[in-house]
Image (cartoon, rainbow, N blue to C red):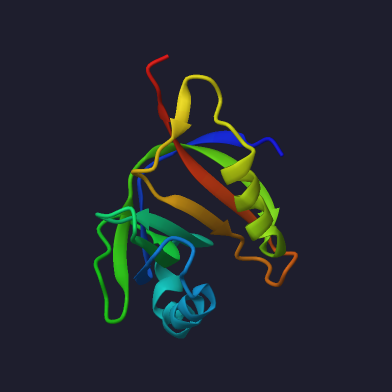
Length: 152
C-alpha cells in the first residue's frame, strides 16, 4: 500500500471538536454532532468534502479530533462550531474506504516508512478526507499523513 504525495496549502476546518487520548474518541458521536449543525457549514464549504483532523494537543496524551468541512479563510467560530486552521504541509495520501480506515492506520503505524529525507510530522494534523458524493462502508476516504524534511 504505497501512498501518493501532495503539498496541501493551509486551510480552515469548521466543525465540532473533542479532546481525548489518541485513539479513544467517540467518532460516531462527533460526526452525529456535526451532522446536526452541517446545514450551517455546507453553504460555506470550499470543496464539499468532509474532514476529520487529528490535531496534536499540548501534551502527547491528548489529541483534538475535528469533524467538519473546509471553509474559506477567515470564517470564525459559530454557535456549536469551531474553526481550526490546518497549516500547509506535505502529505502522504493513502486511499481506502470507510470500512478499511482502521486497517489503513494500522499499516501506516506498523509497516509504512516515509521516503528518504522525510519523517512523519507529529506536530501537524493527520487528516481523513471523505468524499461528498457517497456514504457507507465502501465510501472512498483519503488518509493524509503530514511529513517534514529530516536532516539527510
